[in-house]
Image (cartoon, rainbow, N blue to C red):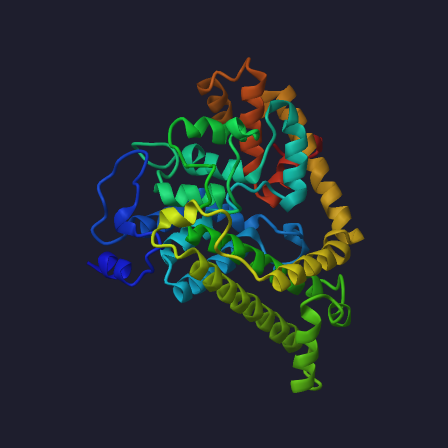
Length: 399
């Protein structure tokens, strides 16, 4: 079968579909798709994935149709991850599934929305998009007759939860977010270990994608100019090279040529450093990747330093730009207002969500109510959150 042939082409340290640890709820295998291909398809068809179209990265959705959303970002991450995995003989289906799922738990309005929701949830265990992604994948998606969530394979869930590194469990002096700790009792995702090489690729593909598309969006939004970028770490040399080779190139082409060369430089560096680390480790199985002392997928020290410098530039010139600050300030107020109102008056929740309160016995359990309110708000798109806010706080708005 095609799945077996695909596995034969993989490196010994790659995750093989035929050796998947399976799903929490056992299901018959598909005759035409591997477990990881099936995971990818379930993610693509989920309601949470569709909502990413109207959840933005930096700009609120009405800023302009051209700017990236969580959906376009996830697709870009998946494309970069697949390309890297093919070059390293890793399982690109698994990496794609992790990449497509990694942002499902984000609240509306990007990091501003997450920060506001986390502040509101501090007395009830806090809020993080990583934990929320696991809740969506294992509980909140209600589509299948035999289980809640998407019942994804162990490797995909592990990759989503740990793609940024091990989560230190309580016995080792750390703490796990409440739902991740709860889920550990059902399905041990080995939070103390590194994730697979495929999940590590997805994490670095995430960095590459948002570094470059935020740079692109910031230029096109006029938050800084190409001349400003020309002195930024990593990018400056590329801009100079493009200008020297194509004098008088129009701005749009100059930006695109710079971005594509920057992506190529970062991917090339990652492949070189990862191959070096794999050579030192002599990994002969996915288990050795997970038990390694550090990540095997990484940038070189010089590229990592340049990337930090680029992020510092973006932080100063984009994420803290007064135009962005004004939008994020409004976004935080919307999230805080919605949370406070639904906590004080849960009867204002839609009927379906009031049913979830009853189902969970959260009508009198404040912490339980807070978590369901957070689930409702986190699942909103930017525009739906703004609409709900108008409905609830504008006396002239239709409800």
